[in-house]
Image 1 (cartoon, each protein chain N blue to C red):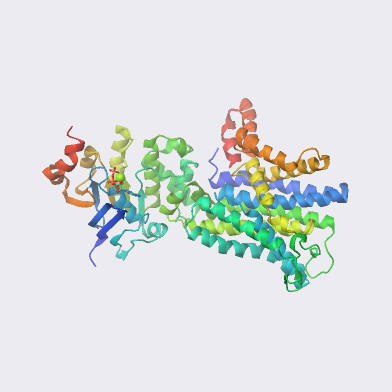
Image 2 (image 1 turned 60 degrees about the vertical axis):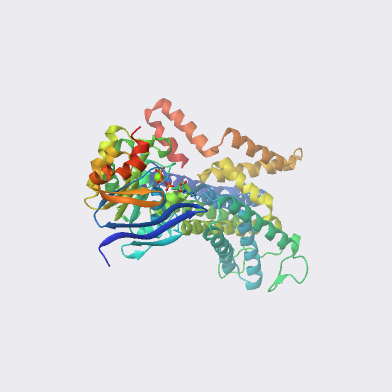
Length: 240
Length: 349
Ligand SMILES: Nc1ncnc2c1ncn2[C@@H]1O[C@H](COP(=O)(O)OP(=O)(O)OP(=O)(O)O)[C@@H](O)[C@H]1O
Ligand SMILES: [Mg+2]
């Protein structure tokens, strides 16, 4: 066995005729901070859904800590150490920020430890002022931060973040970048993002998805300078 | 002013609620058997059993988010299990346990199919309703002599009029109506306290999490299906207990499985307030008394009135009685002290 935390081998996900993923080979070393980019519909979210057990891939294997988790139950994968911030924030909308974080601390037994941990995470993510706010009534950017806080609180070995900066103010994005870098000191992190500015802020290594396949991967400067990448992605989306 | 899920907040408010309920229960046990005529006492015992029934759905639907259209199936199964076991065993203590055990086992089987089959909520409603109708038809058709379990005749639409009354353990003397009333009051208090306590545990909060967002709960490692199955089984056992009490205050008959029974309990929960416990019990008492009084007058069909009450509440008081009252109280106290705001939410959950 290699020292890879995650190893996807030939992962495909077909929806009827749509090949959302068409043979993804993807490896991630423990401790890495990886960015996934790619145009809309490239399959990034679908890939996350296969990793977290929301979809059972049509083909392929997903080795997480050496075990094939493809098609396993969602809660089993979560318990094995995977945490995700979904593209559309998925929260307990009827409950407060405090309650959401309380629930994220599933494995913490003592209630005093939970409260300490909640305070700590709120401080770290900068949402202390929102403590008693009800999630359903919050702005998108705030919801993003709370969901991030939940993932941080649940302390998974592998953290997946799907477009965490969407809907955030510039100040919030700055903070987010520092939280992610900080998180990466103790966790392996994969971030899906469209915001190139943001990617330059956090990433060393980038993987580009395109039409359900991996187009290229490499150091951030190299990849963003690659004419093919510019063509499929930057060219259409950002050059205009 | 903590949020409702925090342990101190839940304990504070829950303790106060339970203390109030305890006082009411003790007062009722001490005063009513002395003061009320026998007929009233038996009627109130019936209401209490219905209160337990209301709690079974308040817990399942209000906190588990599982809308079960066939709660009366568990209610009826509990009563029949008790009657059949009591007639066969000649002892009521074990039979009383059967009243909770049989519906719980039935719910475990049905729930496994419902939740592990990944059926969506619409099918869940349809299937629970269908199962209830089938049981209703089945029980109604057990009129002949051939339909017996051991020495107990099922009796078709007549039910089992000779259901033995509960006795104390190791005793052959049936409980008096006053004792039966006390037992029902204690049972209602017990189920209320149990439910409050359950919701404050990690299990209870996880159940609420699944109600709020099943996907997020699973992504955090909660086993949503097992949680749903568990609360379904617990709720069925409580409905069975209600059936046991009902069987001892009236008698066992197929109407317990009926659609109107299943509808009534839904109405109590809607009127009382989804996501509350006290509200549905209060609504159950009020509506039962109301319909009984109307029935005596004989001017309008009580069922029509129930239907109107349901519609009025859905349209004008969608949160139900308990949240509406709590908001009113909060507004009243807020006009005097500025700290009233947090109270409303604490009470409404
Ligand atoms: N449940 C589904 N059923 C059918 N098609 C789907 C489903 N989920 C995704 N797809 C399709 O799969 C493709 C990949 O979608 P996906 O959401 O993974 O892209 P993405 O890279 O996350 O895009 P974006 O940047 O817009 O979030 C799209 O063509 C999409 O329409
Ligand atoms: Mg996406």
